Length: 403
Image 1 (tube, one colour):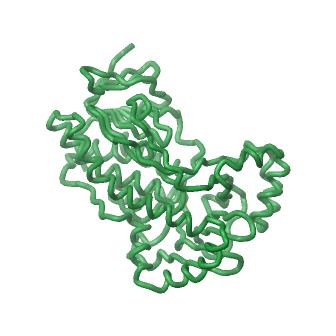
Image 2: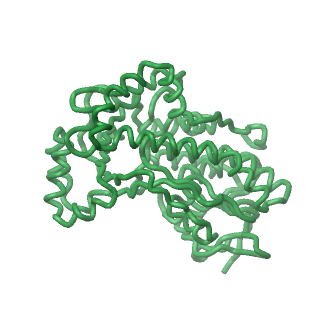
Image 3: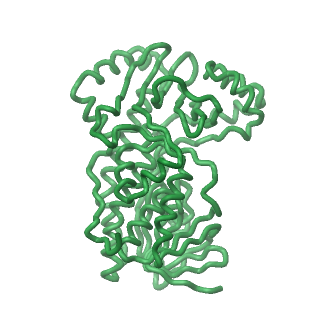
């Protein structure tokens, strides 16, 4: 088996892995990116970008080009119950230009990031490379084996998602936390939203439903179910499931009956949160969903992953340049980043209980609580935290050796 060498081997070509790769390449660090999929043209669940993530991508020079491929800007987020808007988180109150929620297909974003990485001689892209083992020397991780590829690196970065193979191979416990009591059944319908573009959680007599417009002419719908409830529902067959969905989103009932022909037209997201017991080992560090997993509430996943890349970037540059890639050096990333991630997880849990839970007490106090929150100074602080996270993240452009 031929062996190649690099400075950093990044496993996972999602937003976190590609953004980190581009930051490292601009800092003169060689990067090999291993991605198990052969193409970016695949199905993704998350595509809502918060302003914090938009700012990172803009500074990386890829946001405008990705938007030009097709995207929708949403004015904000609404919690709707029946005919009443209980909460209207209006992102237009935030400073421009990042004063919207951006529905951006991940393929558009990944293509632009990949193209930017491809302009550097130090970049090697290995699509279709499914990691099977880690290479170790003297107890330290020093590379990966993926099919016919053996890549030796000073650092291996696990950016391969919530079910990270790198994390598993490293023997790191994911520490799953059942902070949410819902799963989400995702599907798209060719029925564009009318009126104002906002991301909505709609509450009615049934389960809450997440609805937002997505490029080019569809709506993305997330139907919440009790945790583990889909299996019982699916036992009744696709016709029964289709009828239940049509009742949950009656305004799209015709499209539901036309487009949902089999259970394969639906995608179930097992909603859970958690943080890995540790994010680093000798020669290895975890990034994004590999280190911390989030539910869909508040659209924080991509935002946090991109900000992770920004925080990890100077840690890796320093470690590679100093030739010190032990756990002590790499753990600086976790020390800086874990408090912010923990704060977002707590905020998401609060949002989930406030918006999705169904019990008599919550249903009674929710309208009054939403009105109070939206009329106090707390509202602006919460809105800023949702949009940008609990702290300010800045790209270390002083480390760049290339434009």
